[in-house]
Amino acid sequence: PKLADLTLLGSSKLRYFEESLLLPVNNMHSISEGKMMQLLTNDASDNAYQFTEFNKNHLTRVFPSRQKKLRQHSTNFNPVLPWSLGCQIVSMNQQVCDAFVLVNDGRFRANGSCGYVLKPSSMLSMNNNRNVPKTQATWQFKILSGYNLPKTRKKAFAGCVNPRVRITLYDG
Image 1 (cartoon, helix red, strand yellow):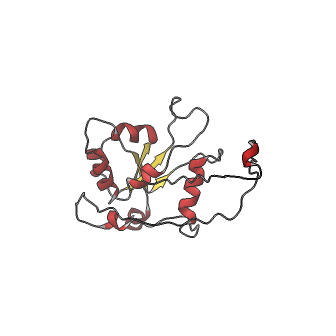
Image 2 (tube, one colour; image 1 turned 30 degrees about the vertical axis):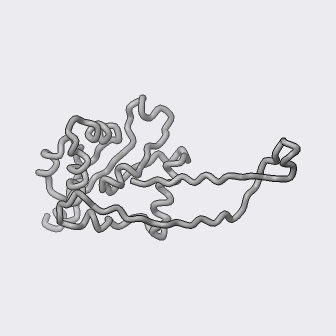
C-alpha cells in the first residue's frame, strides 16, 4: 500500500482551486478548455496567477471541451495558454491536422521529440514575485526555398516577383 501511494496517480475534476488544493499532490486535476476559460474570464482578476501557483505543486490536465459552440468539428484549441499557466498535460484532437496540432508538435520537437518538456525555472522557484522580467530575443530566419510564386500581371513589372513571407509565432 505504501508503494501504491507513491506511484498511483489519482484523478479528479478541477472545479475550485480551494477544493483541489486540499487533495494530495499525486492527484491529477482534469479541466476542460471551456471551464479553464471560464475561470480565467471570471470576475476574480487573480485567477491566472492562482492557476499558475496551483500548477507549481499539482498536476493538471486540460482537454478539449465538448460544448458545441467551442468544438463543432473536432478542431483544436490553442495549447499555448494552458502551457503558459503551467498545465502539464494538454490533450489535442489528433484526427484533425490544424495549426494547433502543429504548434503542439513543434513544442516537443524543440526537446528532441522525447515526449515531455521540463518545467520552466519560473514554475520551480518558490518566490511569489509576480513581476517576472521579460527577456528579449533576436531570431534570424533563412528562407530555404520558394515555389508556386505568382508572376505579376502588370507589364511595367514583367519578370519581377515580389514574394512575401508570413511567419506566425505562438507565445504564452
